[in-house]
Image 1: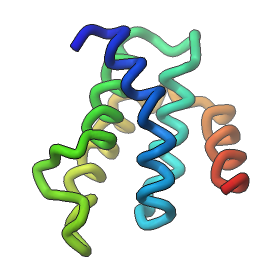
Image 2: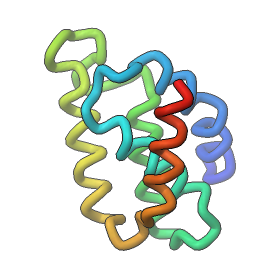
Image 3: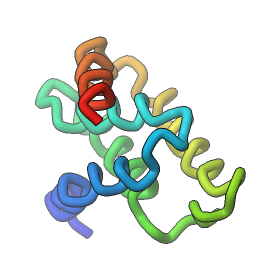
Length: 107
């Protein structure tokens, strides 16, 4: 999958996945902030690549641990998101979290 295809896949499927998981996952705000960081033109290409891969994993129905397994389903996603957050922490800005909070309050 090429970079443009990955980005389009994320844009087309991100909010559907967010609605599916609802507020079941404690790291939801971080995932949404990463999405806004990905769309930010000031985010470095390296960070965008890391975010894109993490979000693709999060959105993908293929998981190391299927999301439907109660209690464990999102542990692999959490690990990928946490690792990516460490890698891109300098790229995540307060405005990304502001947008994430706004998105969460709308739903």
